[in-house]
Image 1 (spheres, rainbow, N blue to C red):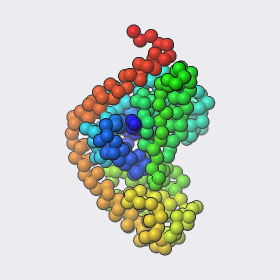
Image 2 (image 1 turned 30 degrees about the horizontal axis):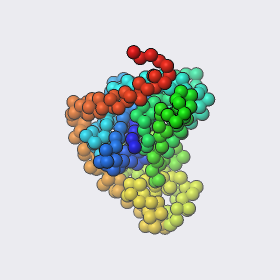
Image 3 (image 1 turned 180 degrees about the vertical axis):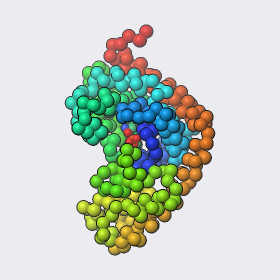
Image 4 (image 1 turned 90 degrees about the vertical axis):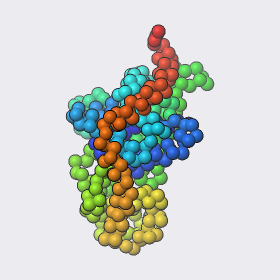
Length: 339
Ligand code: TYM
């Protein structure tokens, strides 16, 4: 068993990242490293340059994201915490897999279609080949489990397709090189939606800060954002089926359930029949209470850049060692002479 996942350091960690992915990272770290399995968690800084960016911001966001992950419970002594840049095997492996990935597969990626929009000719080549780098990220370490939110499921299916085709094309039968990774997606909170629009996911790139709860928001900001979150005029239903066709209500109930570590059914058993005037303050308080310790730790960790850089240096060294054997076998399988 080997657990691998990544996050782009493109701004604040928000509640969607936390409930959709990072909480699972921490849970898996605590459960599996004790049994001798490795958890590798990385900052996808190479992915972050696929969109226009300001170099100084990327450097600052990278360190900020390290602080945020550690504040959330990622322990650099238990997990291998690093950034892609310090492990060149990621970029090398992407090139090796570019020969196996098909244009048609990449053309079907919904994230490519969404992010490139109508201006495909003007999109970066990196945005198009982004999922091949993501496949490299996990295949490089022979990942078995990849904890992610629902929006990354398609990219992981592509990673499996690339692995399978490579194994077929270049490996002897019965001796595949790459392990096929399984996505681990949480039952509640797999897809946290924007607070302003229940049909769009909560995202770092949404220009409105009111659309998301950042892990760095203070108590007043969280209460205001929840109070102003879009809803409908109906009271909450007492059964989950009653949330159908009510995306904003479903989202807030899902957030409550995920944060409280329970299910939507249990939340509705408590709040069914009540209006948002009662539900929103309860949700706001739950969030404030749960996020306050993370926020305090984050502020403290951010004080010391040398410590944050030290975490990445240490993690990268371990990651380079784990990546080396699979990378060497990949060169060899392709007939590339390395010595
Ligand atoms: P990124 O940086 O957009 O998001 C990091 C993680 O947070 C999850 N997530 C969400 N979950 C639920 N609701 C939301 N609104 C929400 N928004 C984000 C994402 O699913 C993800 O798990 N391409 C990846 C980074 C990556 C990666 C990888 C992940 C690069 N290589 C290899 C896994 C394995 C990304 O941009 O995630």
